[in-house]
Each structure stands twice: as structure tokens, then as C-alpha cells.
Length: 79
Image (tube, rainbow, N blue to C red):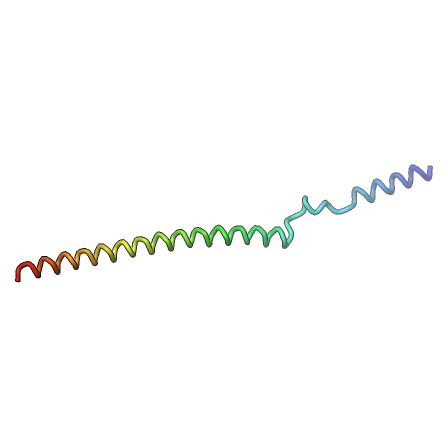
């Protein structure tokens, strides 16, 4: 009888134990890892956008410089 009572008590204690850490909500470390990955992804996107913007600005400035040179040559030709 004592063995059955002890077995029942151990069974009840095992069932009352908290859930394993993986079944619980993510902890601070997991959350930090997730935000770190998100921030790296965001930084990469920002770098890509900035690179594209700078490229377009360079292209536009070259186009303006070319137009100015062409206008200067054209105006010098008539004098």
C-alpha cells in the first residue's frame, strides 16, 4: 500500500512540474537573437536602398555634366 501511495505521489509531482523551457514562451535570449537577426536584415535592406540612391544620384549628375559640356561646346561653336 505504501508503494502505491508513493508511486501516486511521484506521479502527481511529475504532472505538477512546470512545462519544459521549449514549450514556454521564448526567453530574453531567444527574443534578443530574433531582434538581432531582424536588425541585420533591416540594415542590409537600408544599405541596398542607399547604394541604389547613390547610384541614381551619380547617374543624374553625370547626365547633367554631360548636358552642360554639350551646351558649352555648342555655344563655343557659334562664336
